[in-house]
Image 1 (cartoon, each protein chain N blue to C red):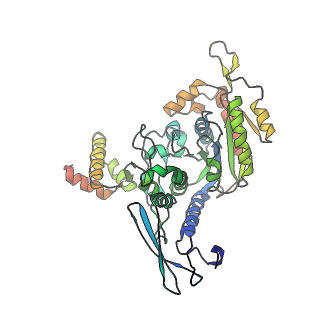
Image 2 (image 1 turned 180 degrees about the vertical axis):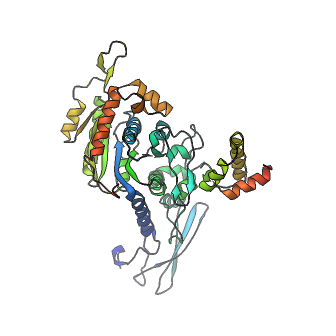
Image 3 (image 1 turned 45 degrees about the horizontal axis):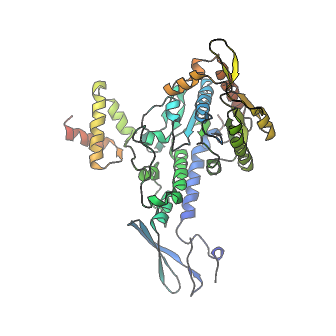
Amino acid sequence: MKKYSDLPGDGGSNIVGQVTEQMERVQARLEAVRRIVVVMSGKGGVGKSAITANLAAALSREGAKVGALDGDVNGPCLARMVGAGDERPAVGPAGVKPLVGAMGVKVMSMHSWLPDARTPLAWKGPAQAERRVWQGTIETGALRQFLADTEWGELDFLLVDLPPGATQLPSIAGLLPSGSGVLVVTIPSSASHLAVGKSLALAQQIASVSVVGLLENMGPYECPHCGKMTSLFANEHGSDRLAADFGVPFLGSVPFDPRMAAALDEGTSFVAEYPSSPAAAAIEECARVLRQGAGTQTIGAAT
Amino acid sequence: MKFLCVKCDEGMRFDEAAGPEEGSVSIVFQCPSCEMRVAMLTNPAETQLVNALDVQIGGRTEPPAPLAALRENLDQAPLLWTEEAEARLRKVPGPMRSAVRTLTEKYASEQGCREITGQTLSEARQRFGK
């Protein structure tokens, strides 16, 4: 009796062919993007989206064309953070127009596809009781469509903000061109280091991506009254040492600044409003590393 | 997926797909030698999994529209405006623009539209007499 490999073709369903075409559409769309950087962490609440939004603004301030994809389809917040608000994208013949936020950052987020801010993401169809079977597939498909069908245009940077946890990285890495960068975010707590270490290990196992480095968020806090610097977390093993443990660059520590959260809530640019703040300086330094292309390979059309 | 006619030891060829109906898709294969036909019937979870892949069994005749699968599968997908419709709306005087947008979206929802085109705008205008 013949085996699967003995039968030529795919049997006629053309599923493999269509999946291949889907990937080709993603690759074609991203040809005009010079660098892609995935922002991730193994831990929730470390400020991935805040870092993504601020890096996008910092890169854009220096004249770069920047796009931001909100990869957290269940908890989307990037559109508001970059100042694109609650607008709806417009459909064109070649794709869907991304929203444009403050500093000219293009953004695509599931937030724009939900009826309102309070409605959670829900998928229709049969087999709701068996969501565990298909939900991951449909959500990864949503990210693929955002990549392939958004009219990103020519970009110097496309930042992809992933949801908490490391599980999405292999899925998104499979969609992105080889050589895309991964920037891992942590906070200076032992619990975060425990989770983020796993993310660093996973990122290093994926051959198609390159770890740009580890960035610490919510580092020292400067008292607005006396100016004393205090650590918000007690952790003897610093984030710089965690980076060294994994042999990745340490991209610095972004001090905690409540004005950053306020700016993100308003959709304004913290780095533009408070350029001389230590937090803005740390963000700018990280942006400088990205501009130099450290850890990433130049892809697509040169500008 | 591939189907083998065990009697003929030949790969069966895809013949047709039908559905989904009651959450099930029927996928028919036929042996090129003995012409025996076999139908694979999916359960709702399998149907939804294929749906989640954004593929059509047997292939597509044309590429999908932008974000078509996302908008089809979202429980409450918002109405989208085409560029043409947005451009026409921008020509409406400012004080009236919000009302025109609301009434047009109301009309489009009643008609079961997923996109608001220039044609939709014209029809809504006729309907509400604007």
